[in-house]
Image 1 (tube, protein in one colour):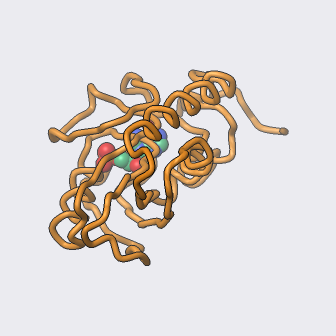
Image 2 (image 1 turned 180 degrees about the vertical axis):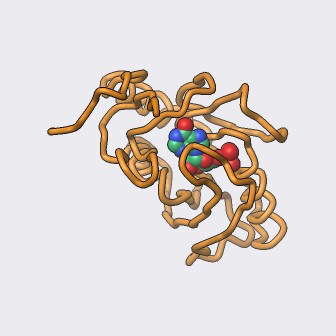
Image 3 (image 1 turned 90 degrees about the vertical axis):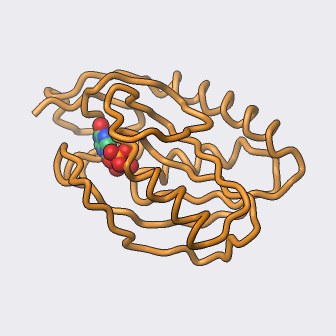
Length: 176
Ligand code: IMP
């Protein structure tokens, strides 16, 4: 892996991630049991977390994705846009939104409202791989969190800096 890692500091290792995903999968499977759930990944950042997580959920899983854009560089723009809509009808269904990271909370609040009010989902739960509780600009409910971190900007495991570093198998702190 020929990467320039001089700006990186590993925060969460591959091994820690693998262990936590098993735990999250058990908790989520225990919650849904034999019921079906539509798992909605928020593109692009959630794609690796979602792929690992659904393989640890024993319930009846359907998968879809939404695209949301709100970030430029390391800054949230607060201007949230739906760039890709659902392809599955979620009306009256249980939905689990899978997010890479909850930062200000604006994206997840927007999406939770959208899925209930516009799409008629019966119940919306949220699983986030990372959460930055100190960065919240709105109150939002996150049902399962992989790891809580500080306000540092992180990359890897699906998370990017200007579309780079999503493929890193660990979470690292990015320093400009
Ligand atoms: P929020 O709306 O501020 O909660 O931001 C959520 C989105 O911002 C996430 O889905 C990420 O795409 C992006 N984001 C927030 N913090 C980071 C970070 O530290 N690294 C990479 N992307 C981030």
